[in-house]
Image 1 (cartoon, rainbow, N blue to C red):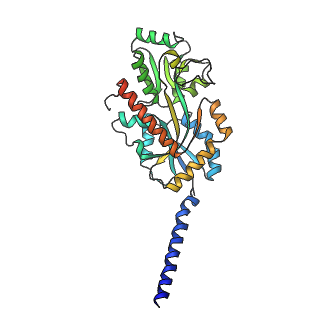
Image 2 (cartoon, helix red, strand yellow):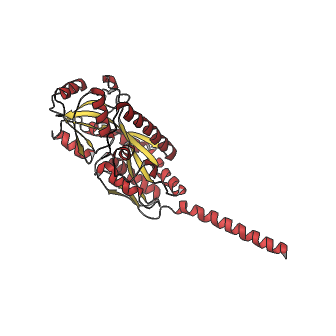
Image 3 (tube, one colour):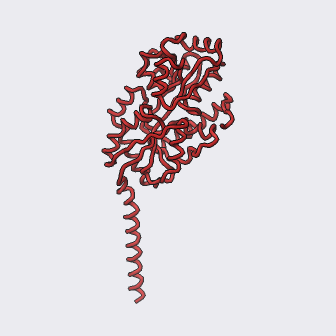
Length: 326
C-alpha cells in the first residue's frame, strides 16, 4: 500500500513538473498575440522615426503582428521615456531611445521620472555622429572662422539642436568649453525642425546629426563631423579631431522596454531586431541615409550604455559641464 501511494505521488509530481515546463515555455511561444506599441520620443521624420519605419516591415513579418508607431515628443524625449518606464512590462509596450539623452536627462533635469536602469535595451540599431553646420549664406566657411566669428560676437550666434540635456546640447556645451566661444543654443523638438530652421536661415548654425548633413549638404555648409574618421557619405568634411578639437559626439538609437519584461519575451524581441538589422538591404538603406548601422543585442547594448555613461561622466567632470538641475 505504501509503495502504491509513493508511486502515485511520484507520478503526480512528474505531471506537475511537466505542466510547469510546458506552460513556462508557452509565454515565449505565444508572444506576441497582438500589436506592438512602439513609442517614438520625437516628431515624425527624425532619426528614431526613420529607423523605425525602415525596420517596420521586417519586424511585422518576423513577429507576425502590427508594429504600431506612436509619437510622444516633448522635453527632449523625457516625456516619452517617463511613460515607457511606467508602462506595463509585457513586451507590448516598447519604444525608441537615444544615447546619451537617457543618460544626461536624469543627471540634469529635476523632474524626470525615469533613469537608465528602468529599461532593458533590446537592441542598438544605429548611431549618427554629430557635426557642426551653418546656414548657406553665413559668413564663415571653416571651424576656425566660426570660432573667430563667435568670439568676436559672444552670445549672438544662434545654434540649434534637439532638446536640452541631449546629445546635441552636450556637444554644444563641450564645443564652447573647448574653444572658449559662447553661442545661443536654440532648442527644437526634432531633427526635421532643425533642418527647416537652418535651411530657411532662421538659425545661424546647428550641432546636428550626420543624417541631416547628408540629406541637406547642398543647402547648408557642413564644417566638421564628430566621427573618428571622415564619413564616406561626406568625404570633403573634416573631423573635429583633424581641426584640433578632440571631440567625438554621437547619438546611438534603438529599441528598449521596461526592465521587468519577462526574459523569454525579451529574447523574442531581441531576435526580431537582430534578424532585421543584420539584413544587408537594411544596412545599405541606413548607410545611404547617413546612419552608421549596428547589430547589437541586449548584452552588447548594455555594455555600450555603461561605457558611454563612464565616458560622459568623465567629460562632465573634466570640462565642468554639470549645471544645476532645473
